[in-house]
Image (cartoon, rainbow, N blue to C red; front, top):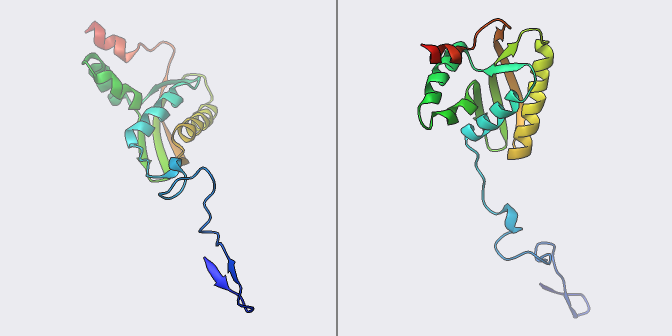
Length: 159
């Protein structure tokens, strides 16, 4: 852009918007930020479910009914994929997500400590992998696994 000064000389004046940093191309900014990325609820649910299961003291995910139904579904070809999301519900927005988890803890562990560790592990995993901000992780402890209880999945196989 040119501009005439009071003495009649013409000087080149470049505004900040006219300058293009070296390395950028036409079309609006850095190539890595062009377009939009969307992440499905199921993706966040899988990440959160796997992260929660990694915590010592978490015996299982989901309610008793969900685990029983899941054990039957696991026998069906292709049904095992749903096991990763059992006990997890995610609400995903454009930049934030909120999670509800239902867990079963092992007898003898501190439920408060397990819940804290699950929250930390889930938040770190989801934020690292998706770039979404995790605004809350609500945890419902639906059962305690006693040492002498048989596994529900084993009972289904015996019948």
